[in-house]
Image (cartoon, rainbow, N blue to C red; front, side, top):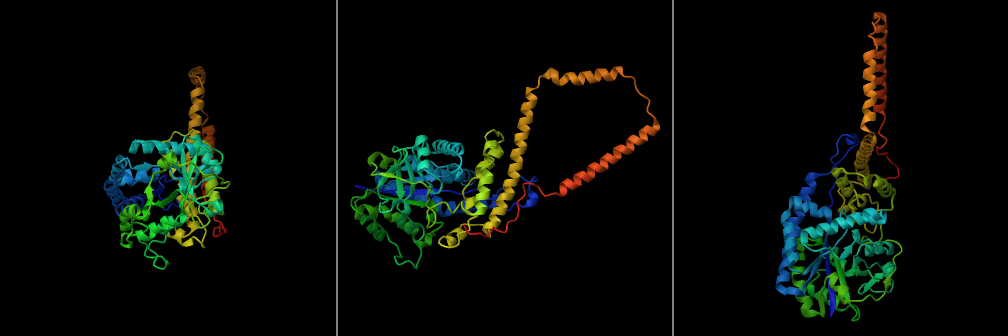
Length: 476
């Protein structure tokens, strides 16, 4: 019997507030608390809570025949715990059924896998520990941010002990091959790779409510008929979707909840497919071949590459500047700085700087809270400038503390004791009134010079301030 692997991604970033040049060095709070709280509550009400209830009802109705998988970013988990803890409880209920697999990813939904192995490994470990803490089982399947994958990334994931990884069934990688098989990593064949069937997945994610689409309205019977027409030798159809598709991107009025409500029954009655989790597919299926991906792919846009987050001058500068501070962060003990370091890595910040206005332009504008990519860049770089000042100050303070700790106590106090002793032996000198006047005048001159010097120093713009660019509108 062939399988449908139904997987949902749950993610919400910590959105930045409007952070101006004059905030740099003065205000270290970067996040739009109101918007973050408002959005997580709204999406929970429209999507997470009713969708979780629906999945729980389907599991109770069909028992072990219906299965579903989730990955939930660390930033989403934190916001749910803070503002809508009942969503966490509903995910726990799903976990308790034994029919749901929770999948690991980067804690901050970051692009660390592209630039810094140590940071990547650290975030994956953080996320796996968080999932185990909340839902009682350590993940064995991995899903990178935005389904980003390459041979090298897959090899790192295998080295971390994961046995399965999800990615996109990109046309330019597969060629004539089908995404409806299980593959393996070219560098480490022990890692099995599941590929998203982007045509069927995007029918639900993007086209479901589009009345100009030739297949609208999409019914479960029509959709299952398409699945049933998949070549009989092909073993698995991977439907990988944003969870927000149900109720948030596709509103309840479109019929999306009814579609998923009746999908399992239609699958069981109209096809020879079953539902399976990635872990079950790992145990049941063998790879048909190794998949070779020399350059990273993703599930975004028509290109299925990295240009949604990296590629134009704005994105590349912000990304390089952020990760240039990774070595200093390794020795940092300040908890708030470490938390900000995570939140500033979230891929959404770079997505907002995208200058693509053709094949995927409307999608980018829909998910962008800024008026333009350049505004997103300026705001992010102002925040990053303040963050870097704090990191530098923390590193300097730690270095000073280490140096003072290395100086023996007796060496520190000896000079002071000698000065006191010497002062005691030296007879007091009677001051000449004229000399006193001259000294006072000289002191006042020094103070004035210092004030002038300080004023000049303050008038200079900070070295870390963002420079306006004329190339801000360049297309990536």
